[in-house]
Image 1 (tube, rainbow, N blue to C red):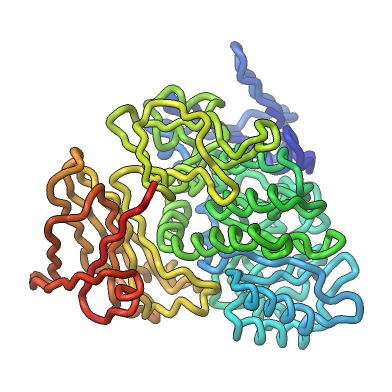
Image 2 (image 1 turned 60 degrees about the vertical axis):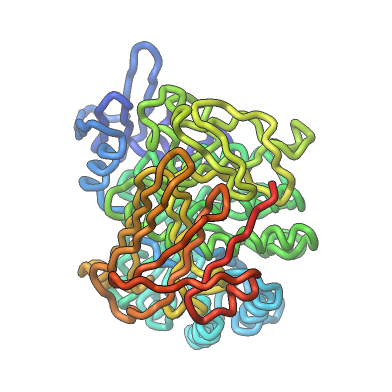
Length: 561
């Protein structure tokens, strides 16, 4: 393994090295250096750096998660991404061909609205001959974009001597390009620190920065972008899966890449890329580098447009789940995209590269992207490993079909619309109504908890004001949700939402609550208690009646597998 920045963004390339490694038997090592190196983990392990000194930190812990926590305690807590950062973002050179940033940028925003597509942020390019037409023009765009629910940043290769004024104009994020971070190492680390502090020191907003050419410590200022990619190519999906996993194991949980690359395109591959990246932190739509608008999620028409919309909206609906793990990543360094061995350290199969093309998204969702459909010429996914042994049940998120753990699944049906996605039995998934931007999420909408009752399980949901720095003062809430049910599949399930602890600016204290409870058959009885007082539930017979109800109702719906 080369610990050297080569700025190569292909399979086997090195762009964001980290002089840190750890073993599953209880210790990790961080070399305190900015010098290039090489690690060899064959029968006789050697770790060399190009210097005449030896300076290292050792972490000794009982688990890999604890080693990652030690690493970020020493080198800095990872950037805590604001909620809008999880939405798809659009980056382009809007200020070209006689168009202004305001006109072209808002036109693009309107296209997302017209196509009913979620988007969270816009990233005007201020380099490569683009520019944004002056601070007044930038401020006008920020103001108009905000009315549509979008945030504005800058994709920059320029010096950031104007950053304080740009932030005061309303920009909240930065993508630092190669020309700005130089060759990486300490130079690149200083660059992203300047970008991060330039935002947080000139506003009350939480900085959102992503970059190339990282090192140990980059995680406290920026997420990692995997560089220029070629779209329309299965290979770029294949090697990105272990790339994302490796970023998390290297102490940087905030990772992202361009949707279907920046060059070329293919309708099927683009759709597959939108699917799996909806279960990753940062999604960048790097439009404007192809001949047309091939990167936009509606470009290829149906059925691709509807499939892309489905997954982008799924991501917005699962935002409370995502955001809780983003906070854990910030606090403890445990990534959102998790290698199987992080969640199943006692299963030797997860220690091997046999699971490098799948991952856990948090503790409850297993994602196995389709990455080589052209090779098997069928809409199936092979070599999916379900851990946990025979006592662990995994559920196809879309059909409800159940599988026992401790085995490899082949020929798993994955038609174009379907990402292989499994939920762990016993899971609790906090959700919110699907939406197209954070402007639609006011805090007045219902809380939604999707539950798969099995055994005694819990989930502690985190929330705050979603984009300011007040979380640093401890302003935020945690809500404990528990589920108690027999593992046999029959009996009584008791689901409890405990009172929220804490508070934050703008918090809404009176909200409705919905439960989606996945069961094998219709319950013989239901009861609800609020503040120790039983509430009568009325049965309705259609989804429409349920959606329109204003009192306490329930609805049973059977999925046909």
